[in-house]
Length: 126
Image (cartoon, rainbow, N blue to C red; front, side, top):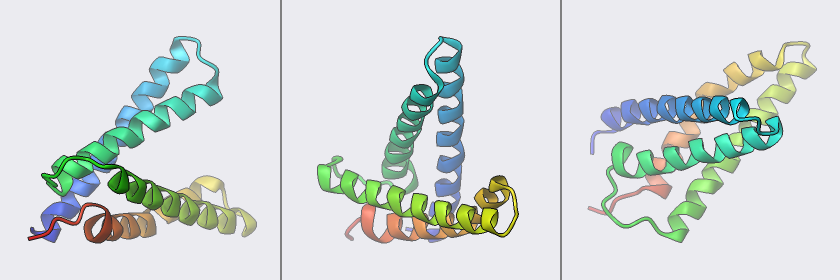
């Protein structure tokens, strides 16, 4: 499968899951849910959308979703969180705003996430 097309779908999926996360957060906050709980629930909704879209849209994996694949996906999420936290820590230690660190983390998170997803999480045997 064309890696360039997969990368574009990967990015589109990221934007879609982010939009779902933010929309869910908005609805949950407006319904009166405690902010920290609302953030967690919205995050889980966004991650679920991300998983399903990457499986069936980005990488077009025809196999049924299974526990090992979900576990690999969650490992990639954890790795990307660690990268993000490390870069935000560095940025804030250097006197920059956390948002600067978050923005700086996006390229490595994209690269690591795409590579691990393509070669490990959603690898389709040919």
